[in-house]
Image 1: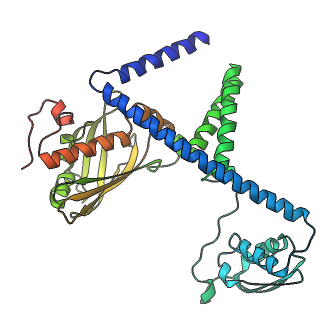
Image 2 (image 1 turned 45 degrees about the vertical axis):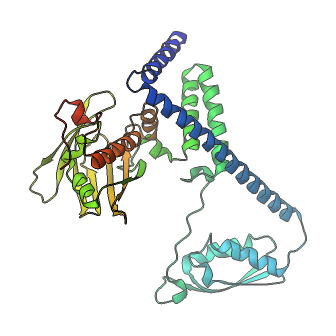
Image 3 (image 1 turned 60 degrees about the horizontal axis):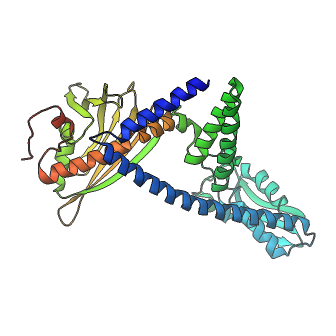
Length: 392
């Protein structure tokens, strides 16, 4: 076990040294790492303040509930009515339609309501501190029909335990992260199979708390094309027609993308534009996949998605906006599910090979290409040794 751990550590240090001391890209990577560390420090500082405020507010709320529970003094009817009204939004889909009156601790509920929400509302009102009884004068209806007060609205989400919700509160993330870190340290320290399982579970819990991403998205399970969302906006000093035409022809992509070796159109006879992409993967191997254009609006929008069976399923779109000074604002959005989910995305991020890093660099190359007319020296087309060309 000790030899294996030593080997892994040595391999990791060697790979890191090769990555950051590379003669061509090492300086850029070190600078990028410094920027990321500074950003992480600021993010951690801001996150600490958010957690502290959330924890303080929750503690004060819990203390107020306990004081109210221990205080045997009967609250006034006005306070009781306001407490019941405050709880309506968590129970019924049209809280504005419910009238609440309180008299000597007896609450009267009236107004139109959907029939299946009546028992929940009465139980909720009875649970409010200070309520002695509830008088049901509600007007139940099987469906909204033509009743104005029951139009629109949405059913409140089902109440779930905090750690089963898709979005954790800052306090829940702090507790989950601390528990996950403790489980990971204690589990891996035992050096047994059960310890490894506990450590792996703790690591997953820590990652879940740190990213606030659902576990299935974290692992890339059952998320189709939407696992990681990426958005980027860039301004290019070129007319919108020129920018759109260049982007609309995917065969131009190797002229400003570093990892795209070739893009060619495939005739399908199905009335759809299909393109076959050949890209260079993180390990240097070539990967091919097919994509189809799902939406195209001249000088305004292009959207696409990969075909079924692609190793990395993704979809995306590009919006083009003409500015008063003649420049063009390009907004790119993409959703993809990497192999191993967000864990795989994190590993690729560390190595600088994830789509977000690549998109940032490629958009800067495209900006340079469209503004100067010259192919960037590190674009795929230049690296293959093809004759440089300029925009007409």
